[in-house]
Length: 245
View (cartoon, rainbow, N blue to C red):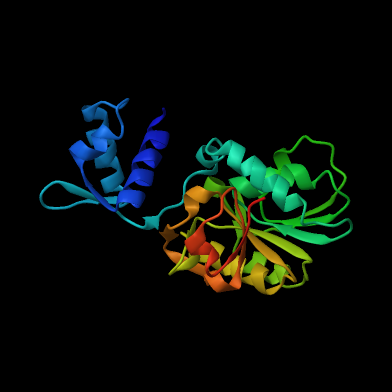
């Protein structure tokens, strides 16, 4: 496993267990040496994803940071492809559809360009698609964030407010019962709120690894949104509709 995959596995275990001793954590990761585990824990702690407590216990931190799109696009690929196929089923011909930035939304774009629809997007990965394209596509300008292949900012929001979207598909870095849908960027959050308000019907796309985690900036309350994901979650579903099959 690459370091990011190892560290995601560590975070997943700590999310479930809340707090663990390093020796207990190592038992659950038999294919990882103790030295590698300690190194990964140190890196996760330096990025504020976990916290080492007195006595040697390790605790998961709920805040998440933005991961480069080049990394995200290689993670949970089957889940993201599945979500994209579910999402494209929600779209009818000739509709005007917004597609957000993010790796899952990029998988959706690959499917959606095959349909006779109007796509409005701030996802610059649209420029790299080589599929047969039947959709009309508008890429909204703005400040370019290379790390996440996204355009945002005041100019972007001003232009987005000119549209009424039949459907909108929005990315999220975390989906949490208390904090709702979140993202690490104030600028991205502001853009997503504009989209949410300009859409007749909107969906947040996220694979199940995003459940019960939060980032630093809120986009919407859980009871305001619909989620398309690869798995059902009872706690999240108490407040939000989840489309998973």
